[in-house]
Length: 342
Image 1 (cartoon, one colour):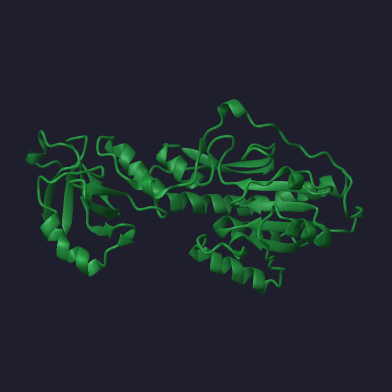
Image 2 (cartoon, one colour):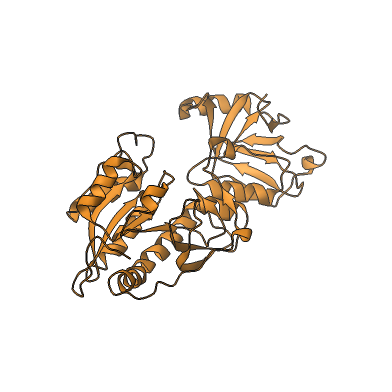
């Protein structure tokens, strides 16, 4: 490979990190444990773009503070595919562009940039669960394991050659947040062996072992949408439970009472305790509402859903809690039924 920086035994691997949120922060922490082998020449955070107001999450503030505390260059740019970013590459001369969570499909001119190796960290065991939020999809589909994969960036999403991969076992009651935390720990731990492997390849000419993904075995799940939280009361309680756990903490599940009252549910519990009135009751029907506790029939008559935290929604806006508490005894009457919007 014709590197922009001629290799010397003393030179460190120059890494430009592009990332967002928990994964970007985990990779930065991992890189900072490898200062004997690499130099972080800059960090381009997804939220540092001019139009990133809708891409904020709490950990992003911590990510920014970490960049500032370490005295790293906080890149400000409209995007990776811009002329502005290409000019930056010419100035910083990185050997590796490491990506951890990003909202652009990287174009070919950047993938083929001379002397630059593009590596993406994807929090699943590729080729399974390609796409924007594998933390949710592995729970929703009942997987018993996931993983973390470092792979070459290719024109097709999450499809490049795999360089490093580690399995992450999952417990029975995982939710999206716990899966994310497990994947972040695995990604952090893999950064050091990744850096050493890339340094040996780029600076010392050693072969970089990588293998093609089995594209026939791939699965892909798109970006989560608010409507993914709408409950299908005809589904099995197990499927509904996985949906609720998988979408947490990004999307709260919800339903429409009598087709018009939009209600969001928080922390619902599935109970193996069926009152006699369950017999012949359609799933989604309110069984009772007492002391703020809402009980709803499910497709399996031996179970019911118990909800103690809920909120009414008007349009896309949550009602104030005081109004929800005022309306709940009036709206949540037995025999009324949750379902799709009318």
